[in-house]
Image (cartoon, rainbow, N blue to C red; front, side):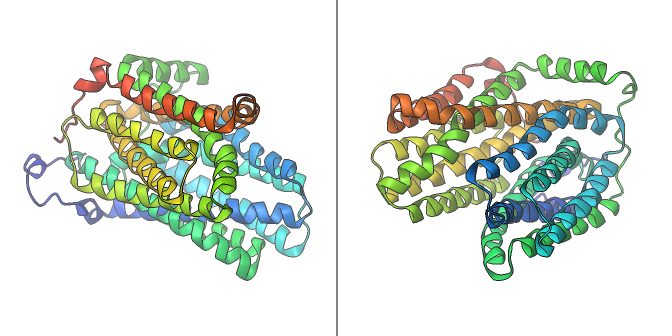
Length: 414
């Protein structure tokens, strides 16, 4: 990987400089296109299940099948990402998703779909996504010079988030205009575009030198790399807590509390405000390059407490929208600086496995949170539990900054 020392301080290294590199353009085009399609499908799939006469419980089974498959295969995806060419992982996964999503679209359009069949195919899609995601996250470093890694991570995150925002909006329009099946067909088409982009990549082979032993041995090596960085261990725990507590607060309590206190439309507005916060946070990361980026990101992560707290205190629409925006803003900046810290400090041959441990922590915690939030919140009170959620999210982020490794870690291109 070539580097240009002068570029680290040169004004030529601008916000969009990474786009001058064809491999980076292909990577972000593929990932952003997939993100757009993946935002359409959950909306379309939900209505497809309901149109089949499925209940809320059956819809939950379809979604859970996808989530369970992700948990099972994420670590294996990390091992493969360090064993074989990552480009092949991305290209193969996207090509396979063209077939599986195309099959779902045909079944729904033709009237042959059933809820169990959609659950099975959803599980297959979950496996395909989890197998490729560690490789996708690890690929950024191979597409730009080292001096452009910071802007590249920020720009990729911004483009994917923006694509998701568009996908959420387009998904509802497509379902209303042409039906759930055709909306899922659009997702299949986005995977075809992504597969083409990934096939055009010309990046170095990124296989680990010694990654040919047993899978458990390779996973053990990846775990030892995680444990070698105390900041990485602590913030993986922080991510687990975030998904454990906020997953249920967002998906279970939010619609109930905001819907009853303000109105159902207010919940949709709050999700939109959070997405705007993501985009603004991404734009800030294109310009702001603090030397101690991980510390700055972790401090701003504490802002995520604003959303559940706003919902807890007998909310008004303005308060909830502000809390949602601040939540998205802080989370996006943390995520960019977190990704950059991993990219800069984890060896290339272990990068996919480290990302797989990051994914598993999130995948495992969120379903557990969804399962436990309802009973616990009912027992202690919905508003009271939202206060607890806010305290855990904000307090744990601030406590994380007390670790010396978090405070002292400096970005390489500062």
